Amino acid sequence: MRLTGASECHLTYSTSVHPAETWREVHAALQRHVPLIKAKVAPNSEFGVGLRLSALAAFELYDPANLEELRGFLSDEGLYVFTLDGHAFGRRGVMPDSRWGPGFPDWADLRRLAYSNVLADLLAGLLPDDQLYGSISTVPVGNKGTINQSDLSLIVRNLVRYAAYLVYLRNRTGNTITIALEMTPGCLLETTSDAIHFFEHHLLSQPARVHFATVTGLVGDAAEEALRTHVGLCLDLSHIAAQFEKPSVCIRALDQAGIRIAKAQISAALRITDAAEATTLLDSASEDTPTPVIEQRGESIAHYADLHAAFEQPIEPHERYEWRIDCHAPASRARVGACSTTQAFARDFLRLQRDHAVTAHLEVEADSCGDTHSAEQERELCANIAREIQWVCKQLNASPAPSGTGSKSRRKAGGKGSLHTAS
Image 1 (spheres, rainbow, N blue to C red):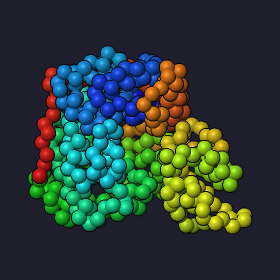
Image 2 (cartoon, rainbow, N blue to C red):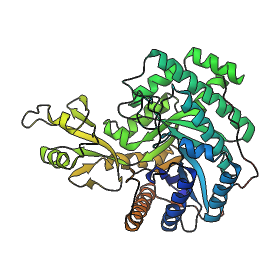
Image 3 (cartoon, rainbow, N blue to C red):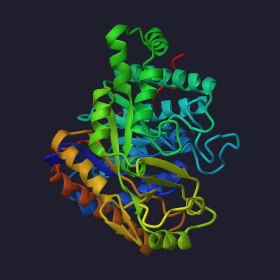
Image 4 (cartoon, rainbow, N blue to C red):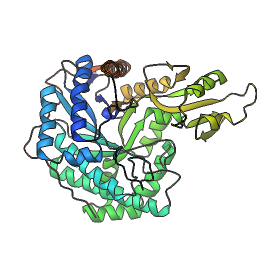
C-alpha cells in the first residue's frame, strides 16, 4: 500500500509465506489470503502485493489468459504489484545440479538470468500507470563456499546482461526496474562491506562497464548511472541484524558508495545472550533443519553451522557473548519463546526510513509455515501479517493513502514481454 505521512513509500508483505509453485497454486493462495489481510490494514486503500513467483509460475503467466486473470483479480480486489520475490527458482522438481540446493541456481547459471528476464517482463506489465518504479529481490550472487574466479566472471557478465535488458525494458515501457541483491549470511554478499566490494571491484569495474556500454550503446557516466539504477540491494533486516551490523552505519556506507537500496524486508533475528536461552533453543531445534549461528565475542565474529557446533566452543565463566540466528521472526515482538529478538535493529532502521526515505519499497517478511495449514492456522497467519504491517506503519508514523490517491492496476491488452537476452 502507498503510505502517506512521515514516510511516503510502498509497504506490503512477501507472499513467499504462502507456498505455491504453479500459477494455479499462486492464484489460489492470493485469493485466499491477500483480501483478508487488505481488509485488516487497508480497507479503503489500494494494497500492494509482494508477489513471489517460481520459474514455473512465471513462465505460465506468459500465457495471456493467465496474465489477464491476474490483472483482473488485482483490479477487482483493489490490489497492485510493485515488487517481486525472485529468489526461489522452484521448490518442487528442482534441478539436482543446483549448487544452491533446492530451487536456487546462482547468477553464474543462465537459468537464473532467463528466469529474472521473465520476472522483469511481468513486472513491467503489471506496474500501475502511476507507479513507474519496480523492484525484484534476488539471491546474493551465490554461495561464498562454492564460487571460484570463473564463476565470478560469469556472474558479473550475467548481471551486466540483465541490467542491459532492464535498460531495454525502460526504453520500451517507461518503467524503471531494479534487481535487488539480498545480502545473506553464508553468501558472497554477506555483509555491507562485501556488497560494496562486489560493486566497486566487479560489477562497476572497467571491463564490466565496457561490456555494458557495448550492449546498451550507453557510454561514460550514462552507462555507470544506468548500472547503478538497475542493480541495487535488498536489505533484509533479519539477515543484516544477524551479522551484528548497525542500520545507520550500513545505510551511510551504501549511500557513500552510491549503491541503491531498492527494497527492504522487515523482520527480526533471534538473540541469545545466556546459556539458559541457548539450552532451551537447542532442545527445541529440529535435527533435520540446521540452524546456523553467528556469534560475537568482544570484537570477533564467528559463524557456526548449527547450534550444536556453537555449543562445542568453550566459553569462559562470565565471558560476554551473543549469538544471533537469522530466522525472520516478527519485528513487532521483543521476544519469541525463550529468546529476545533484534527488534531494536528494526526500530532503528524504520526511524531512519521515516526521517530520510532510505528506500521506496518496504516488505514485511515471515518464514513459511509449510505446505498445509488448517483454516484456523491460515486465519492466524493473516492476522499476524496484518499486525506486522500495522506495527511498521506505527514506527513510520504513516498511514495508507486513501483510494483515489494510490495506484490503479493496468488492464492492458497483451502485455506479454519478450524473452530477449542481451548478449
